[in-house]
Image (cartoon, rainbow, N blue to C red; front, top):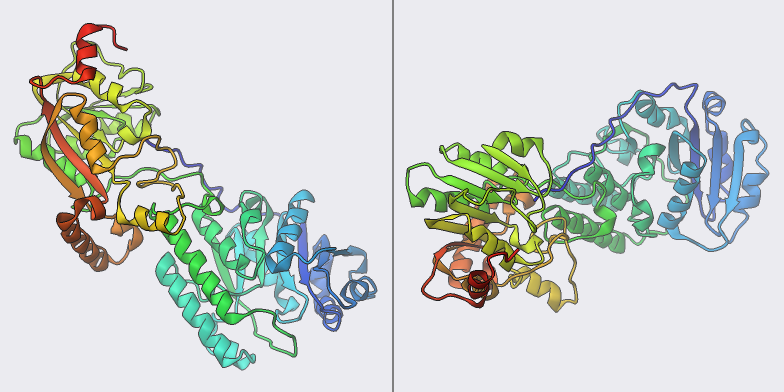
Length: 509
């Protein structure tokens, strides 16, 4: 089966004079700095923006009144709001972005009221969005070598930033100079498509929104900004912040690998099932099982073929592959000798006399409510000496057991706990499923965790991890095998209850 992926809107150039631009200032106990920040916004910038809106996050000082009494360029464009309850750094951003969306801004710039980020550089952040070069622009203090330290960034913060950003670049396969700048500009229509309200109210909100941008495939650009550290009081606990960033980044990575799920990172609504090329993957195991049968080409029925990636691989060896899937797919039509779009739980769209040498259930039985009926219906189209090859995830895998141990049971975009799964199997219950359909196991193979998804650019690491995983799967398959692949044939000598019903009722469907 396959999931459709909504296309990402490409950045579109905006007319500078026609674009609604807002500057969003987050403020907390900034009565001594807020006026200076407003004064440092260039006159030319004031003339081109539509509004500067300040959200005072329930300050205990006179931040709001000081901002409202501002008397300078752009006074008529200034609005000040006071949060009756302290929402936190992330919560305050949520309120401001919702305001920008509600008021139909095209671009919003995030600026801090403590003066740590230079208002003089607002145009630099807006420019790439106006030109259609990016959906989001981050001001980076690290792009120019040595600039951060010259601007007074404390040594511990400098190295902390570099270490955290380096870790995130490795895990996320990105190359950003820093992840931890709070000086940003966003394309507001893009913001409206992000589930940012599900993010934390704490300081690592900035990291979580980056992860959402990455998941959505949106374009991010960095521009250099100067660094300034004055006498402002920092409310961030560096150790707690670093730990939260670490956890958020790993959580997102595990989600992209199909081992975890969090709705806040599900920006594009799921991902397409692709061919798994690792030699220990279920797809490669299935291809190998077909090749072991004979060097002669076969007629193959691929039930739940998705986009036909597996069918294309089998067709390369000369096999004739008929694909069936609930979702219509141009790719499947191209990859299969013949493609049928229909509800596989009701019909395969085949004539009664169509017979096949091999029938494949590649990670499909978990998706149907009555896999027994599906298997029995498929048997009608199996030639006398034909085989069924089926794969499924191991719900007793050590990863699932550990999650349960810590009270976690979260569905994922794909993998063992794919959100579209309605049946889950252990090795024992998977074997039992086919025994009850009077099928005899001819061969059983195990699969490794898809480390190529976890370490996409670290082939040596992913391959080594796969071999280690397979060694433990060989020792203890029910614990360490990520998936099972069975090759089966009809066993008429031991008819099951389902087969008995099949013999009695010719119209079993």
